[in-house]
Length: 224
Image 1 (cartoon, rainbow, N blue to C red):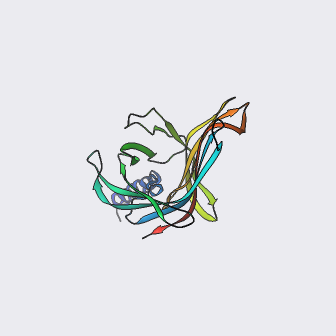
Image 2 (cartoon, rainbow, N blue to C red; image 1 turned 90 degrees about the horizontal axis):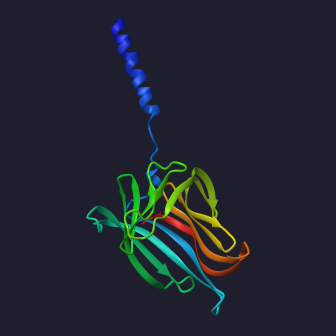
Image 3 (tube, rainbow, N blue to C red; image 1 turned 90 degrees about the vertical axis):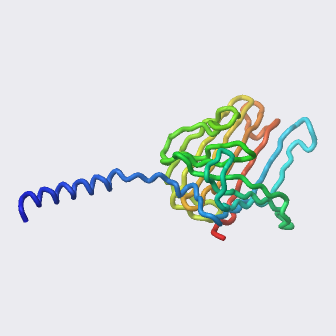
């Protein structure tokens, strides 16, 4: 082999190694888009108001989400249907069915909910990356960010090797307590949601005067 050939081979080898080093894991697996993928949750909604009766009321139900066929969303983009099925926990009766849309577009994982376009994730998934959830709808700005990325978790006896947490709000004062976050897993999607928006008394998060809570507990997922 000539010196020239050896030099070319070395250059190609170095170039190939550099390409491997700069490869980026964008994390699209956190936001599955495969038709038939489903996730089921037990949902708890709690409503607080000390001025009415009952002062603390709750509703529990089973929620199933499922990714459907491709359609055009309300912005004319090729998206997928995103079904929401709500069931009675005891009887199994379907209480409600909704059809939203879901898309990955220009580095954003979006869901159109009740005709409101919301950015649920951005890619690449990296710690402390921030975005406005409501950038494409008329609702007030809501900043979200990744507080944890590629973290293993156990949720309701399910083991997940790679999860990412999206924080929406974490505020605590004399009379207010807001803590809202979601957790996503690669190849599953949303595996946990906990939203609290409460009016409290004297810094006591257990002395709730008014507000709402929504909690999702993962119970099943798979492919249909």
